[in-house]
Amino acid sequence: MIEVRDLRMRYGDKDVLTGVDFAVHADEVVCLLGPNGAGKTTTIEILEGFRIRSAGEIDVLGQDPAHATEDWRARTGVVLQSWRDHPRWTPRRLLTQLGGYYVPYSTPERPRPHDIDLLLETVGLTGLADNKLTTLSGGQRRRLDVAIGIIGRPDLLFLDEPTAGFDPQARREFHQLVQRLAELEHTTILLTTHDLDEAEKLADRVLVLAGGRIVADDSPGSLASRVAGESEVRWSVDGQRRLQSTDDPTAFVRDLLRGPDGDLVKDLDIRRASLEDAYLSLVQQHEAGHTEAAARLFTEVTR
Image 1 (cartoon, one colour):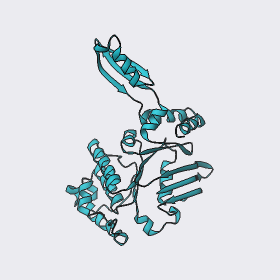
Image 2 (cartoon, rainbow, N blue to C red; image 1 turned 90 degrees about the horizontal axis):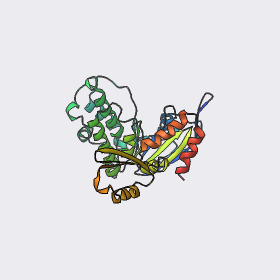
Image 3 (cartoon, rainbow, N blue to C red; image 1 turned 90 degrees about the vertical axis):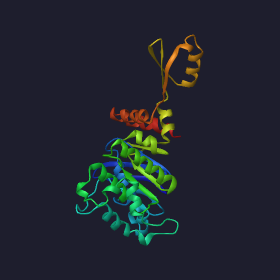
Image 4 (cartoon, rainbow, N blue to C red; image 1 turned 45 degrees about the horizontal axis):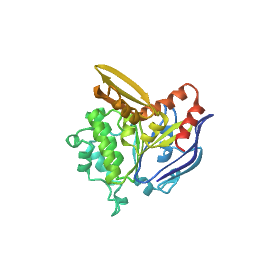
């Protein structure tokens, strides 16, 4: 679906991307993480064909995005961080208008566009379908952004901070939508987010962009366990709380329960390393100026 080799981007005398390499395979959900200013949005915009790279080779759906055809664009969907539209439009009218552009690119295997009523229901806007866009709240407007991104039933979907402005219920519904797109529609998804819990829930793989290149490429679970290897075991005995860090929580708990206080152990809880632990380890290295050390640390865990 996506092949990126030695991608480079320079703004004036500042190198933002200094040799990015990664691939995204069919039916995957891949999350691109990185500190502010790392070049996440620049990378996504290059892959979408909205920005011309300085150097490198890119193949997206079999074409170079910088010279892609209209047929290629019909197979991609984009959910931007924000965009402007006519305030007099309603969600139904806007989606109907945009959906019409995809009709010539419909195939028996992938009919286009989405059914409008079903799409409105999917993103939770059925009751607001005929209201003016100016009456929508921020979260409702974001749901419409998502609907616009998937109206053409894309093979490949780019999501840039897709749940910004969502309340917890809307975020949960969106996560379910992403999972349905990946599993039922076989949509390949590349997303950026600052919500590490969201990345851990949705992504098959996580890419970490820092220092102008990809410094980690692994599943959320593997990345967390390799970079932040210790787990915390918490328990209580006679009302006193206890805590122990260990590389092998299974063995520690086994020994704990077999020990002299084993029958008195209560409130046993194991906190394993999370994606957040791994990611913060990287960010802290970079903020401390140890860019190369952080890059080596994360590169080692992906080998």
